[in-house]
Every structure is written in C-alpha cells, then in structure tokens.
Length: 404
Image (cartoon, rainbow, N blue to C red):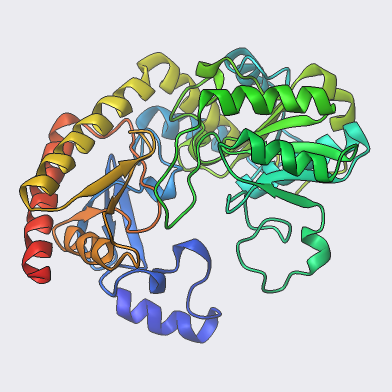
C-alpha cells in the first residue's frame, strides 16, 4: 500500500485526510504522510524510503526508535497488564524516580499528552491561589485545548479570557502584563526557551528566568515551566535548573518515554494539597506500559549521559550545516539548543527557500522540517550525522542551482 493510496483512502474516512501538526499537506509536496517503521535514528515511510531522522517523531523519541532497554521494560509490563482496575506498582516507582531526579519535584501526577499536563498544571495553580488569570508569552505553544490551541476554530472568546500575554524575554512586558490584572494572577506559564514555529528560536535570558521567578513569588502565583518539548533534552533536572531557577510546577511529556504515550506534572510540596483537590483523570492515564517505558527512558538517559551524547551530535550537525551553507553562498540562522535546533535562511520571510531546501534534503534521505524545530536523539552517532551532512550538502547545492 503506497502513501498515495493511503491518502486517497483517508480522504473518505478522515476529515481532510489528516489533521493537526502531522498533516503533510502543510509541507512541500514531497513530504510523506504515512510511515511504516523506525530503527535507531532512521525511519522508513510506507513507500520504502529511508530517512536519517532529525524530527524524532516530533520529539518523543529521545533514545532512538526500538531502544532495547525501553522495549524490554515495556514488554515485561505488558506481559503483566497495562490498563487495569488501578495503576501498577510502576506508577509509584516512576513518581519516585521523578522526585529523585528533578529538584523542584516533591510529587508527580500522570496523564497522556503535553496538553493534559499544561492544563492540569494551571488547574493546580488556580486551585492553590483561588485566582483566574494566567500570564503567557505571546505566540507560545502550550497545547491544543481550547484555552491554548493556535486555531480559534471551535473555541469561544471566553476560553481565552483569562490569558494575559507578554513578550518572551522581556521582564518589562511581563511586569506590565501582571499589573493589568493585579491581585488575580494564578500562574505565569513559560517555555524554557522561545520555540514558536515559523520563527527563529530564542534562548532564555537568565535575567528573565530569574525575574519571572521573583515576580511569581511577589505575586503569590505559581511559576509553571512547560517542559513538554524541551524536557529531557536540555537538563534531566529541568530546563531552567542550569540558571538556578526552579518552578513551582512543571509539565512534561514528549521525550519522557521514548515514544510511549505519557505526560506528567511535577510540583513543589506547597502545592500538593491543591493538587489533591482536582478531579483530573482519563481512562488510559494510569496504563502501566508507558510508565515502565518512561522509567527505563529516564534511567537510560541518566546512566548513559544521553543529553551529552545529543549535544555532541547536535554540535557536529550545527557546525557542518554552517560550513556548507557558507560554501554555497547562503546566510543561515541556526537557533535553539543544539539538541533542539532549527535552521532558517536569512531574508527568507515566506520560508520558500527553507521549504525547497528541506524538500531537497528529504529527496536525499534526511528528514527535517522547514518551519518547526528539529530534535536530536541519543541514537545519532558521529557517523550518522556525517552521513546526513553529505546529503544536506547536496541539498544546499541543488537549492543554489534552483535559485540561480
């Protein structure tokens, strides 16, 4: 069954054939929609084409596809049971591991998606403070529920009424936003760095991170770090830990279980009581297999220094792309952490050059993205990155020829 066949069949039974961020209709025409399998840092689409994968399933795969230790842990738990009348012992073990690993975590609650976790974190903050307003950076992505989805379709204005926006990395803007709803701020929610799609990434300024912490303390509000996208790729302890900034609540998902569906909220002891008051649950939130996979993933990242492996591979990729772009006469911007990178072309406001180049990379067997950040995994070896760079060099050459 080919990609074209599956798209044709999907058009009859799926709204728009596909929906959400995985909709290949948003990309250049050559991007595949349906995939067959993954192994290590490679994926194969249903047409049999192989790609060196720099999207890692949009972030969840952090150790590489079919990682032996993770798969073994998941299989052991599956043999016992997955979705039972209550959670398995693995839930307690995973919570203990998170509390031991993350300095700002005194407890953990589990769900399935990053959206679940960010929404749950804000519920805890509101339960704790009795307040309604949330300060959020303009353009930030925190999930797909009505309060935060990038599309307004199907939502009502009331669902956004309690959000007050500020400019990321601007303490002046954050303070001004707080002043407009003085006395009613339940939470400040921030991503560890600005990773908005279609724009260059922006690392957090340490002074902003510390200022956000100080403001939350002054307001009596919760500081919430949305570590869904960056978690377990910058620092296992939490992405703002290197700056000495610890949140009250952290939302986790994506890389947490190397592709198995799970999310978590961790929080400080002062918010344990308010968290207990929530009715926040789901039929599959307590399934044990993903929890076993998460425990194995976090332990493997810890035991193998997986983030350092990703940093080396990401640095090799960034340096290689810079050299190639310059040699072919392109000025590029490479932004974000090297483990969660993105490349844009100078002056490419409509991203047409990025679209053409990424499509050329795809034709040569390298899967990356023209308008969303990429992801490294611990399965990317020096040889894998070198092989990818040979192909991106060809893509730069073809893009230069295309542009004349």
